[in-house]
Image (cartoon, rainbow, N blue to C red):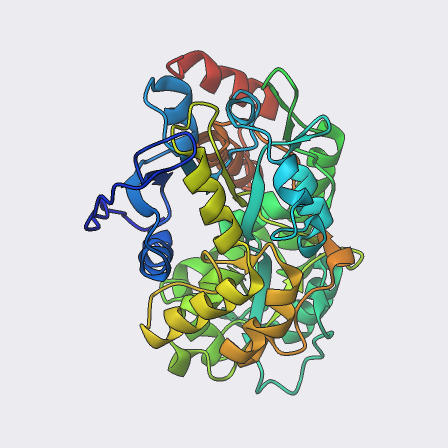
Length: 411
């Protein structure tokens, strides 16, 4: 994740008569730097409210610990148990003419519900992808979706082994550690937070995923040793460069990462959605927004919601970001929570997306995860997968690794 510094915007206080608040300022907490451009745009479109952005490293956790409350939050992992309950109901907003629930991805919108009450509105999401060289003619790449078995077939066809070892190699799941975790998601590992906040998963499917990952080293890349020898010898360059040089066939990248590659360096690159049975797992760091229960200017926050979730507004923000050449992708650095924006507007800004916008039926949105998910995934889960796909793995279960980490984590 990029290092983010605090964003300071000029604050103009205008005394107006508001319904429950004489202060026209709206305080927004976020850890997403791209939101600053939206704040600036909102402030320039009307003169009743002034939106002030305050950077917080982890807005959801800070909301749990802080006595002071913002008026609005935009961040990921807000749907975690223990955080979601700190937001005010939003159902009435979706009954207004200015905002209709039908404009959202329905499953994404449902993620913001606790029981039958809507507490959060979805903002954006990211998807996993596999990139490759469009100039290759010797290997057949299926259209649109790419599952692990199809990757195995193409990679084995692409491999070239000799007495001096592999000089080209199709793919190894160990090149990007995120793939090790994502493969388990495709295998329905079902990582999620229980209502108590405790992390749960399907251990049988986790172990099945491990078997498939280890089989790749032996069956597709001949042996773990030959796979690691190639990795050590060649994988010091970026994946997109190795693809361009036809040294490797595939490399993993999420959608945002793919479009962060300079245009001249991805000219001959394309991607397929990393999927199984035509189902794409939406990455778990989905972005939500909500009004905390302690908000002092809920009227202003509601006005910002109406403005932000208008398809016309999002279209203007996409154009503005492109004109200003901001270093972000799409809406709020991902696909918008509004299907119409993704279908109608994003392909105009990003021609490589033309014909590649996934249908809603192919998206599998994640379950709620613990508020500490980002830490435990980075420090425990991904290292555990990487360790267990070594030639001689440590004999420790995922349960044991997680329990040990939780004992050492400050409460």
